[in-house]
Image 1 (spheres, rainbow, N blue to C red):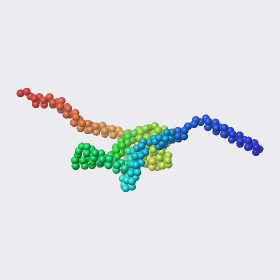
Image 2 (cartoon, rainbow, N blue to C red):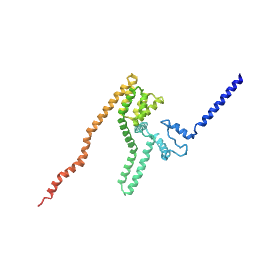
Image 3 (cartoon, one colour):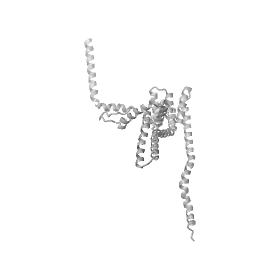
Image 4 (cartoon, rainbow, N blue to C red):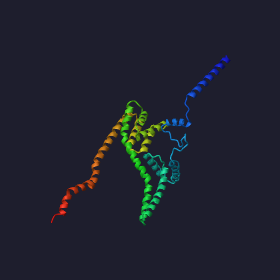
Length: 310
């Protein structure tokens, strides 16, 4: 009996080895780099390589590899001597603008750009042969402009981003409502919106869903999204959803009410822009159109009066 058991075990091992070798030969060989790239490409949030696995070349530009670490190092030194309140404001501004740069980089730019602006303005003053106090005034303007440029640029990007989110909010809420009325849960509806839409708000919902998957509570993730974007309509939506769940209110009804409210506000903004248009058109009309009309109507009469025959 023991000999038969040994024969069976040996036969099974031989069969398993033959099957393994057959599968190994049937699977096409691929470089390790391509396999890793295929696996990482299947992950939506996978980061890109710093070095190409096949060629060994750097995939990031020299600015990102050399200049940004230097700016971060300078910014870390400045951040240690900066108040926490100012750093928090910079973090909020960077988050609202959707920029990938760190607050430390912004602090370093505030130190480096004014020096560069002063040098450029000094050169321009020398080329233009400006004397005091004109050259000092030009240098001062360059320093102030370069100091304020990083913050102003981020604020402009933040306003543009908030405007895009506000415009897309009504449509996204309609899509969420339809998905939940069809029987999907809130998380599945958010995932469906993130997959079907390409707006900034859909990307924010994807971030929200990733935070929930990582273990963060839905209410905290919603309020973090509202604080990160600082859009009034989005904040109201997040608060309504967060308050509806503990009270047992239907989230579908909340979404429907919020969607109707967003459409009503969008209509009001369109009407307000339409009423404001005539006032904005008045200045160019007075400065450009009315003088031409006066020249056409009164020009012949003025010529007749000035050059009246003896």
